Length: 433
Image (cartoon, rainbow, N blue to C red; front, side, top):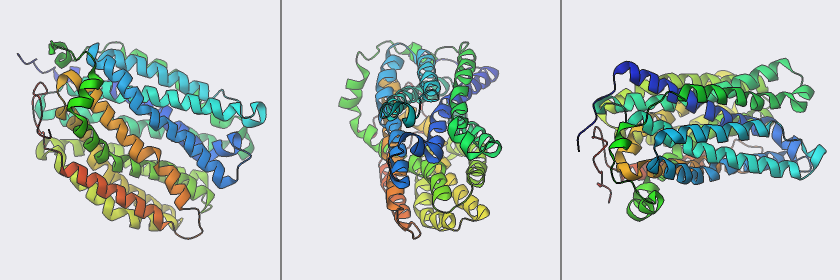
């Protein structure tokens, strides 16, 4: 089949920028909930629980968003493999944005009782459903336009979106936390970032309105009738290995950005502003390094960087927990920064790696399901497990042990996957089958 000529560089730049902006907006929606869960949702929506149980319950609703993400990847992956990548971007952004605005409108427990946490749970589920479709559409639209020798670089732009979304979400939270009293923040201040999601969603829709469909999708003449069935039948081992490999990235990221935030404020007595500043500073460096690491992936391969990231995480988790436990801002920042460097070694190249592992007719479903199942393994459970393990008064070495075990699991999974760089995206990669 004739290959499609590469898109001109300015067009690639516009495409990558639009993908980055949309991904940033959707992850803003997702992250603002995680920050609110760490700082304020427990007392407001689970007031009959103890402080520890309330935090666990709030993180439980946080985890629901990860559980629904694979379902979203199945739903939107079907659309992406049957109808194209572009419709996925619009539908997923609308769903996530609407659910996020609605979270900001849910009355607290003292107003409507048990209906409050139930509504929170439902809306968090819808958030995850939309985000589960977002990643596959944004990454594939970029990866399938990009020239093979620069696929890692261009595909890394949507991967910067989570960092930007996190900084937006926490920047708004930091501003409100610094300017409002604790009473004002608990009464209404925490809702403002959720309401702002509506404006951001409209901006994202405008940015994506001019995107063109992926040329690789248009060249696939025989689209899968039920992509999920083909993925489960022909690529199940690949899905499990990629999910296991990605678990470490999710576990590290949400330990730093969600659990550590709650632990520092509630257990160490560090101010909310200081904790948010330490985490945000580390995420800024992470986002800036993402395209640079992706270039290394184009030159040296995806798999070596993934293996290096997993090994780095396994070696660093105990030092990171030790530095966190000091409560000293500079030491905490350093601990977070090195941990996120291990994270970025994996996630900077994964947007190019996963599409190269799957054949075009099921690529949107397969890549997205593997990616989001990794979120369930590493992201959904980590804040809950870490909070439970750290319930004592001592340094929470159990959290470090848990994270090290996840890193070793991911290391083993990536060791079983093949290298792909660089391959034409119309080639069927069956090296793992």
